[in-house]
Image (cartoon, rainbow, N blue to C red; front, top):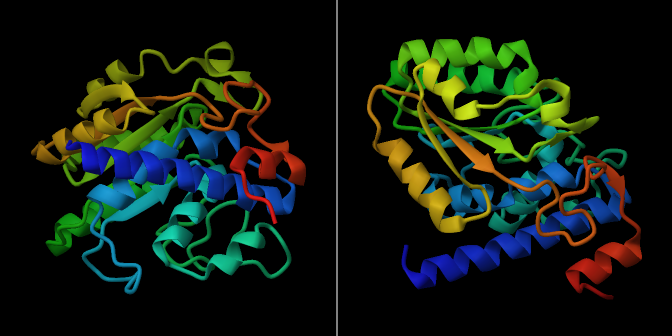
Length: 272
């Protein structure tokens, strides 16, 4: 990756992180930990890899991005607003009555959201269905799906993984946000996923493991995945929950937390 692109993506990741912090801050409480940990990968996909058109969010050959770990909705909202999918004024309405930005992603409310999220585990099944449909229709779309490491304890994740591996869905790229923390504590203490790479490899996936905050490594991993033929891909993103927000980074209790106005304004440097 050339320096110009790397500098652009690095700066963009910082901006949308601050945007997501502000989005949650306006409501006063929200899922900040998992939103921060996926932001670098989201930035690479939306600003460098994905075939999308904010002016035509339903175009048939677009790439799909599924946030199965739906509590990372604010990360999606920050990126989609920055890209112009909807008015930025919406970003002050997270979770409020009549909002188009609910806590978890809703495809019926938010332009640019390709799949509604709620109960963990369901998003990957939807992504596999989309990948199968694209193959049947001759649609060149790539389907990206983010899942959480805590979410991967759900049995539905493994049913979808088994089907994707058996069908050789090389238009499916799954990204595991391996931030090692879930709602109730450390993932390893609750129900360890390790070794994640070996598990998905056993299901017939092309697997890679990268630093989930290294823009260049993420970009290379996506390129490698797209070059594979006959295999679905898993990219294990080794991340830090709350990464990039000084008041949350690596904290066990940052899954959802209150964010007073003075705190988010200090963090982002955005003062009225």
